[in-house]
Length: 69
Image (tube, rainbow, N blue to C red; front, side):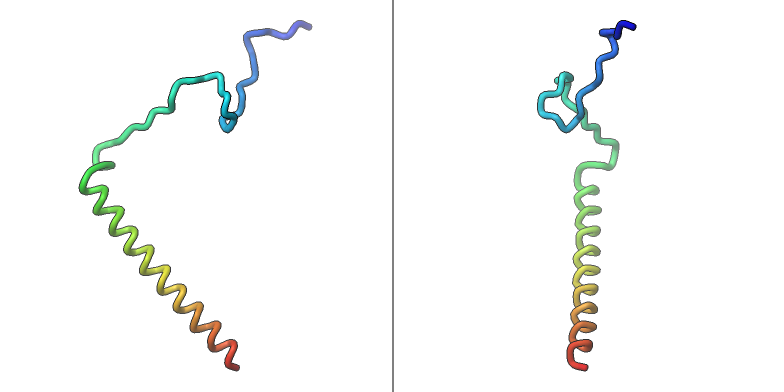
């Protein structure tokens, strides 16, 4: 059987020499940019820092008590 030249395998996306040179599009929906998005990211960052600090403190206390006994 002859192989069809129409069905070429697509190169992997991670290869730098892709045959498709069209840039990937990036769309923003309403509310994804601007001051509201910045405020939302700031609140999320504060929560992440707070939870990370709390978790680190709890682990430090547990390790301290385990090493003193």
